[in-house]
Image (spheres, one colour):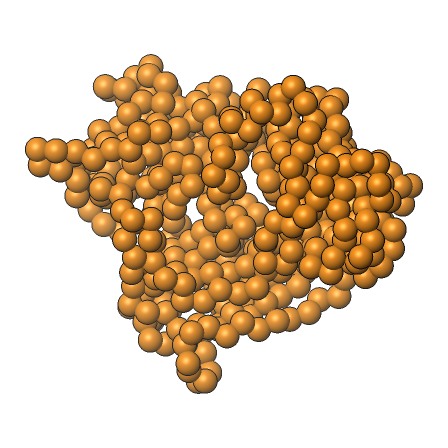
Length: 415
């Protein structure tokens, strides 16, 4: 059975939570309380493919239906686990803050209930284990719960960056935001590319105009690498735009990159939707986040992805599951991996990510997702003390250690 990695930054591990909830359907709320049958009832079915509306009739049969709530009124959400996978029910505000939260439950056929008072702050509901497929909107404009939303008009919002510069942006960059990655739209050099590298000139203002392609929460953040990863300080924010979750809506983000501005990402999908920024250039050119123009690798490791795990294929690691990769600091390496199984669903696609801290990142390098059997990807990188692990985003068991040796010593992280 495929297991999906929990992408939230919850301090309690999913394994611990599952142990606590394996025998019961109790819940913990933030503003919610243990349900005692009060309030207007909304019934949902939870499965990886999406929330299934069950009651009232206005949402029955709908996938991820919009919940129409009246501020100040009490509601009870009763949800049933339909597939035996771990799920929870969470309501968030526009900034992503959790307002109502249940425990994770993986008992097929079991139900959970949470009672809460609706507020104007409520914007979305989701399962934090499967936030890209199990997510719907909360409409607090009135109503008694349920009902799919109609078409929404396209609007535009502007986010001012910390540039303090009123000049016309030197260049416009257009991107499409979707939970599987940023899609390059313009200029021509990045068109159709996934998470394209933005080659910008430090000190010059830019406009990033992006369109929401899938209706999920996304925003655009640019970061500078002026922190210390060893102390979990990964740098400072150059610009952060508001979350936007209306499909087809556009947002304009203005900012001026610094010399150390090195990446952009979405804070809701920080692994999938992450690309590099290279300063010092005059335009925007394309490389993927795992591409390089540096020297050839001194060694190539070969891995196969099989049955939810990495399997060593090259000398020294052949036949080993999730083998430890031993590297020399400062040397160039490549990891070539092959997908050994065909996947019919996008949610099951594997990819390869190199990170400083499994599973919460940040991602130092990553490959694209692969669906077809026999297809391969190669990630080329320079070994540094920051590296500690590699993994596949959608599979909790597909992760291995990276040990980086430096002179007489080495650095590693125990997972």
